[in-house]
Image 1 (cartoon, helix red, strand yellow):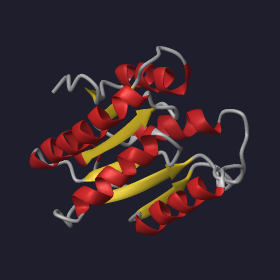
Image 2: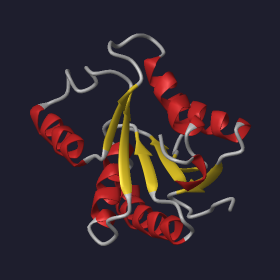
Image 3: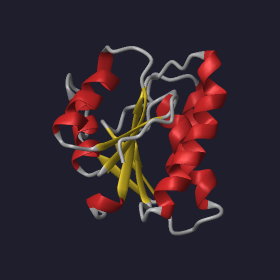
Image 4: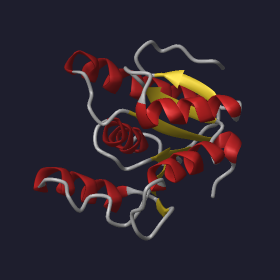
Length: 163
């Protein structure tokens, strides 16, 4: 894995409020550029629908102008996309093909593999860009864990960071 101080992960909800989508996309690009200017070149996305997909696509878009940027997909299991619709599976496969690294934290799905993936991302990152519109679920769990690890947090909606 890459140097933690030069790495940023993403966490966020699968369902994105319509009124947030444009702001998220714009702020993702801004935050990624700001972090790369500060020496962060490794980005880890969780490969899920929603925010993870937007984040991975933003890294890929930024990489077109800055080839030093690397995208790692940290996936909870090999079957993550098995029950998705064809459109989402195709988008997922395109992102997989464009990733620099793929890490599976488990071969098979089990209760807790998503949390294991989230902990892996935080444990290997000094920064975390997040989208949280509700203080419940996996995103809230991941942000709470990040706080215990002194991870630098960057809110993609408000643009507020703690760096």
